[in-house]
Amino acid sequence: MKTLTALALLLVAAAGHAETPQAITRQYADAAPAGFVPAARRGEALFRQNFAINDKMPSCTACHTDHPKNPGRHAVTGKTIRPLAVVANGERFSDPAKVEKWFGRNCREVVGRACTPGEKADFVAYMNEVR
Image (cartoon, rainbow, N blue to C red; front, side):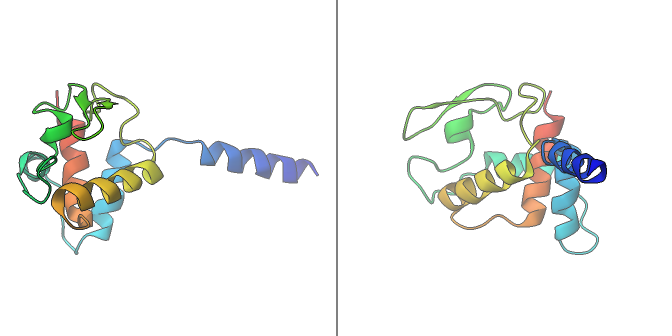
C-alpha cells in the first residue's frame, strides 16, 4: 500500500511539474526534420510577419504589440493578454498542453495553417531570448 501511495504522489508531482521554455523548444526541435537547429531570429521574423489572412489579426503583433515584453490586447475581443516574453511572464511556455493549444488556435487564425514544429521551436526560442 505504501508503494501505491508513493507512486500516486510521484505521478501527481510529475503532472504538476512545469516545463521550461528550453525543454519545450527542444521538444519541437526534435519533432522537426533531422538536423534542425532552433533560431531566435527566425522566431522573431515569424512573430513580426504580416500574413494578411485575417484583417483584424494579420500578424502576432496585432494582439501582442511590437514588443513581446508588453501586455497586449486581443484585436477582436479587446481582452488583455499577458506578455509573451518569458522575462516578463514566467508562466509562458511552461505548460506543453497550453503551448500547443495556443499555437493551434493562433497559427490557424493568424498564419492560416498549422505551424510546423520548427516554426514553434523558433518562436519559443525567440520569446525566451527577448530582454
